[in-house]
Image 1 (cartoon, rainbow, N blue to C red):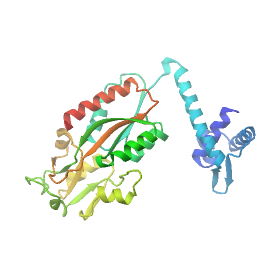
Image 2 (cartoon, rainbow, N blue to C red):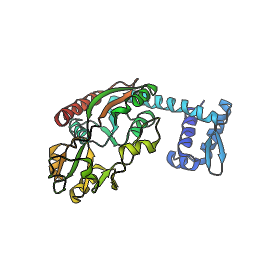
Image 3 (tube, rainbow, N blue to C red):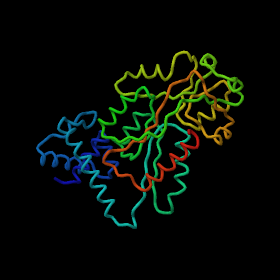
Image 4 (cartoon, rainbow, N blue to C red):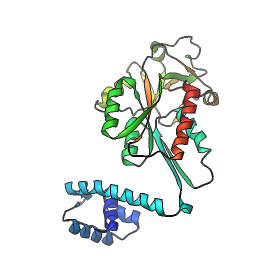
Length: 307
C-alpha cells in the first residue's frame, strides 16, 4: 500500500471532491483518480461512491479513513521529530470560552515564547467545539465551561472521549454594563431590573444528552425581551460602552479592561447559578514546556481576578 495514495484519498474525503483535493495538493486529477483506484485494488474495497455531487465515502471507506487519519498523523509526527533540531518549531494550541482572565493569561504567556520559531493558536468558542477541536482538529488544550448542575453530563462525556480534566475555577456570572447604565447606580440589582434593557449574549450554548432548546431556555430565559448576539469579545465591550441600555453576563473582568471601555461590573444577588471552567486534554497527550508555562499564567490570572 502506497502512503501517498492514502494521503490523496484522505484529502479527497476531506474536500468532498477530486477537483478540490487536486487544487489543494497541486496534483492533476487523473493522477489522484488513478492512485485511489490502485489503493482500492490493493485493499480489495471500494472507498468512494462516485456521484454527480462529488465523492462520497462508502461504509468501508469511512472505516478506512479512521485508520488513515491516525496513520497520517503518526507519519507527520515522525517527520517533525526527526527532521532536525534547527528546523524545530514551537507549537501551542488552546480553545475555550470567551473569558477575560483566559485572554489575559494567553497575552502574558505570549511574551515568553522566546526568539525561536513558534506557532500559537487561540480559539474562543463554545463547549462543544472545544471538545471537537481536541478530538478532531489537533488542538492540544481546551478550557471547558459549563453550568455546575451539568457536571455529571460533562464528566461522563470526558471519560467516554478519553479526556483528562482539571478544575481551574468555579464562579457565578456578574453583570457588566456602561458606567452610564441605569443599573450602575443601583445598590442591589434584581432580575426585574433587567427586563426592560437589552442583553448582549452568546448564541451557542451546548450540553450533551439534552435538546438544544432546553439549554437555550436555561441560558437565555424569556423574561428578557431584547437581545443582541455578538460572538467577539471586543465588539461586545464596544457595544456595552456605546449603548447604556445594554448589559451582559460575564465571568469576572479585570479592572484595566473595564476602565478601557468605561464599563462597570456588578453582582446580581438573585443569580445563584455556579459555573465551572475545566482544563482538558487527551489522556495520551504529554504536556509540553509551553503548555506548563501557559497553565502557570492561567492560574496566576485566575487568582488575581477570580480568587
